Image 1: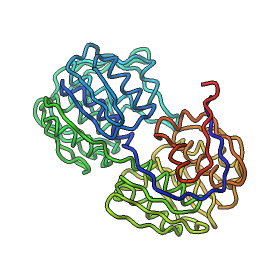
Image 2: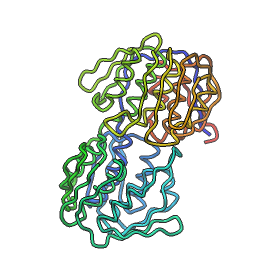
Image 3: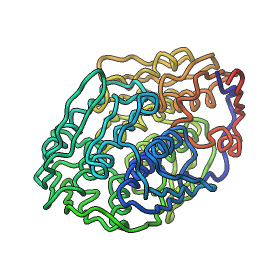
Image 4: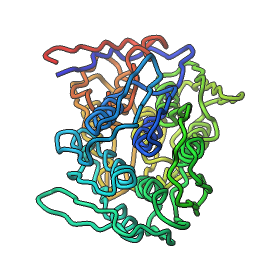
Length: 419
């Protein structure tokens, strides 16, 4: 099992480029099924989840090539309409392929998706939205069987602004006759990036980044070239790491607006932050101040994916910080591992009370993607040496994490023993 060996105590200094967004490239890779031609995607991070999505595309019959950070998908030949269990279980967001397969093939069969165990991420919102569009759905033996039926544009009202349900509805609605409105849609930047890709492909989609999205039933039919937007959660992770360890770093190729709530929290904790175009510079204070309540919310609120990295930084602060997780009920699985490193954290339901203090090196294991990033941050800020196991979770969402942190001065080594 691969693990990190980290010697804590080194401040971070230097420049780090931000990779393309995992949560943007995955739905866009799924959307390449729609145009029946070539899609050239730049700034694609080399991640486990991206490799899983490419494996699904190849299983369906697409030709996919990667050269550096550019992935080219030729979807002119789609030979299958099913995604088997062994591919679905690799990542939770694999359900995003449901809408494009339906739109392209008129039917789809998927098993229930896998991914991090951070609490229920029910796909019932996806299925209810697709049923509203005219999709016939039945579940049998852990598989979902869908048939396009009489697809029609209608108003789809989401009970919660789910990112995945919004994306699946958009990707199915392009095959519907008439016009579809998605009401209470998710507003994340990744939704707007998907819209931009689809519009370049010839689809009629408007409202990405707003609470109402409009889709005219027009299958995209043009070859397209698109650049994936920067990963705001990766950016937030490096900012939290510098805040915890001290020093000064500059992120390049970032979108400051997309991490505005994270920047606000770090500024309130005492960090000095400057933005210029697509660069963000953070200079850490000697010791952070405790934070008032950090409440996770759908975008543009504080992102749930940044909660664990910021909590790791708060473990080193002077005073008390309060975290309230409103999105996923099991987002505190990293807390017992932080406690093993000396963190003082009390959890009651969805609230975590963090009293800052000194951290010490320990042997811990990643429980999920963002919790794993939190452990890396804590280990870099701790006294002594830490061993972080099960880092394949981290591989799902961070490109070349150890290499980037080493370039900033961290003492982190990856060991691929027994892999």
